[in-house]
Image (cartoon, rainbow, N blue to C red; front, side, top):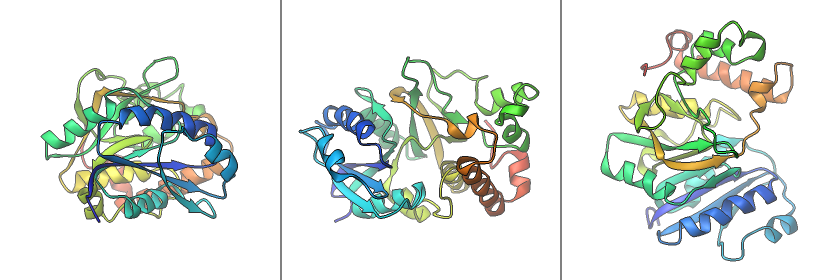
Length: 271
């Protein structure tokens, strides 16, 4: 039964029962007055005892268990297929929702049909701003995001991270981090779900690029606040490891899909 309730929250977890518990505790209170469900997609073999032992007593969840890590995009699509909400909130388990954040995102989508995706303001644990809304990548921005090049391309990186903009007002942006975003079920189904060719990284860029291609707006909503305890492994490491390899492979797939010229000029539009 599709669209049988207002909201489905889909959390993609990977062996983080303690972190997931904190995320769910915040959601229990936030969703109390909403017609909502929570679907957790466990991306790999999981210690069920540790997982169930960390669940908040008042939290009711549905689970999808994968025997292996199938990647972020595919896991989101699994959540889409088993969920029933008119709206879909995708969360990382390391995100803690602040009071009123979900309702504020819902209000943005419900009042403006041009908006295809709404994203919150993400904060570090100390309350400082994370630059989670971005301009589309350019080749210089890609170089600037790697540590050896940052001293030489600081202004390029600041522009890519939209550090030259005011983050206190609601605004249309090119793309947002996939740690937390809300969109309509029908819009995601219209896109055919997330592109599963991305195992990790660039699925969020690709999603926003696809929305822009269809005339939808990606909206940054600073009144909706969430804490994001992320690791940022890809930007902290320049050496060859699995994180960097996943990032590189996804970049190549993105460039192949949208074209290198599109990457050079920075996507469909510029903010």
